[in-house]
Image (cartoon, rainbow, N blue to C red; front, side, top):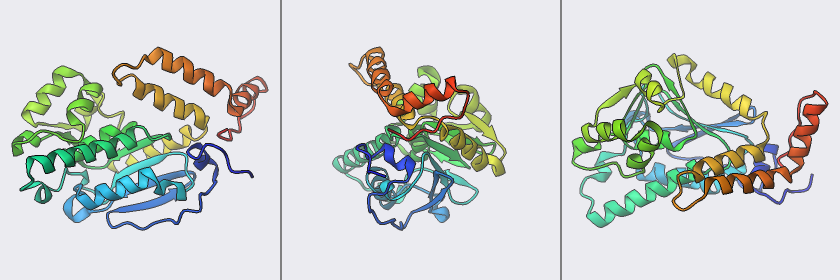
Amino acid sequence: MDRPKDPDTSQVWGVHYFCTMKTYDTLLTEVRDHFLILRLNRPDAMNALNARMFDELHAFFSTDFKAYEFGCIIITGSGEKAFAAGADIKELHGLSPAQAEQLSAKGQRIFKLIEEFHLPVIAAVNGFALGGGCELAMSCHVRVASSKARFGQPEVGLGIIPGYGGTQRLIQLIGKGKATELLLTGDMLNADEALSLGLANYVVEPEKVLDKAMELCAKMNTRGPLALRGVIKCVNGYFVPGVDGYALEARTFGEVAGSSDFEEGTRAFIEKRKAEFKGI
């Protein structure tokens, strides 16, 4: 098979870039049936986001993902208590204003990589998702929550504000009024409250969180990968100042219509068979 011209979409179809699969200090990776499980792996610290984890998340979503074959990513936390219980407070203590601003900008860049990733990213929230953990979950495209999950931005209790996009994405997901209340009080939401507000897409029993996320991945993996990428781009475009979302949609619609996947998808529908997408 010739190497496709588009390096991103080719990952769905098992084309490697001769990258070596890496081991991480704070992340675990596991590939199953064309989806990848990425575990935040600091269970003794409730998977708190420290500098090392940020660096490794950046490495994975910017370059290292090319070493794997998958069509969807599930992010979850190691252990039963937490998805990620926030930032590592010991690292935050003593930061100068300039250092704090740099850390905030760095976290925002990494979570934007996840939000704009070309394939679906699902958060399997298996426990506490607080502070930076909630911001990480919100940067994912879909959130499946354990019935024991708890969401919140408690930063005001530490005398600071969310720094990794929390003041922006929480409003986008649940609306200004309730988001402002939660940001000002630092209160937590339980899983059912998160579901009713639109912060969670599904709530399931703790032992079924990964199963539900994998079910969604399996369904998405039957869809056209170029179409999935186009949807993600257009949805994100809605929130970009100055972007005409309708024009972006029309342009992306036209681009995807020129693909072999579109020809295959429409022909398969007419012939009443399952489409065999190739990501080209």
